[in-house]
Length: 438
Ligand SMILES: C[S@@+](CC[C@H](N)C(=O)[O-])C[C@H]1O[C@@H](n2cnc3c(N)ncnc32)[C@H](O)[C@@H]1O
Image 1 (cartoon, rainbow, N blue to C red):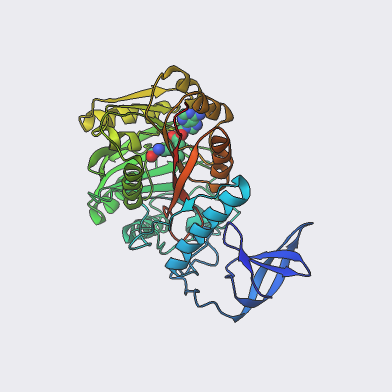
Image 2: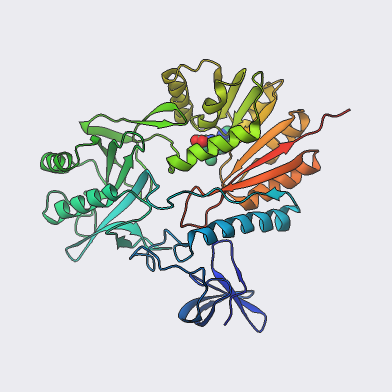
């Protein structure tokens, strides 16, 4: 079979008598023997058996876990091909779903597209006395034992390996069928890019102490940049529980992005790729072409990274965010950086917009589901001349741009940004302008 195209999640598309089959890790232009693994009415799924004609853009994945781990699905493409794939997918999705023919710029990539993440969650399990520590296998809750993840700095794997050794030596129990009422389930490791400080959160099933003293001593001796270890209790199989205690050091590491300083704790919202977060801020500033007297709305603000980065060069920033904790961290970050012309509103963006009489620039950075229809109505009622839309989902971006265009905005340009190299996630920044109504 010959692959004619790639799906949005980078599966090769081939056709058997017009019936499309999507195959993981196949590249456009390649020919291969495949096996159909699942048949649906309008498409099938398949797997590669043997590639008979290899694409010149194929690359040997650096990661030994590539075939089993659900994380990186583009590691078999050379990096320029990954960037071109994202540019093309942005352009074709905007066209197909939004009928938007805008100027899509080349995707902003990284100089080194590996070892870029500053946070990872590792799961633990024990089966027949053997400890597993790593990520979940794609589409399941089975833990793939990870020796080295190439999206993370090496120290993450070293800490994971130390924890695994400690579990094998019985320094603590792992939550599993053998220990159903307690034990370690997950570990979250964070590292600051600028200071290299580390913060470790150990999530247990129940509020029973890990035999922590010797574990703490062992970890902190080997990794002196560990600033704090937090114990969090959560009987659920995802996220953090409400009960936390500091079992070593402090619940804080320091980070600097775009010249601004942040204090990050184990619950903080923070960009996972700090290098590209800085590139994103630079691109937003470029598209905003600030004059100095603007009132800027930063809607869906999180801790207000975007608004804070612009504040020193504009008259005022109004940051809108629903999550209380993010708002309080944003206020803290403003104080920490002596920024006084930013105001946080803890509210739903569609409601808060009604109470802001005037703005010169609106920046939105919504979650994957995009903008709420009523929020778009509010935006169209106001005459904000410039808008910047930061998106992590090009399909909902296309839907929203279509409505904004119909309401009078001109979609000037879109720049995709590679926030998550080696994966098919696409982040993008779009500039819109609204000609004055005469
Ligand atoms: C993609 S994140 C944006 C992060 C932020 N711009 C930053 O750089 O850190 C989306 C944010 O929108 C917030 N959010 C979701 N729905 C919202 C709503 N209806 N109104 C206001 N904020 C909302 C989420 O809590 C989240 O912090």
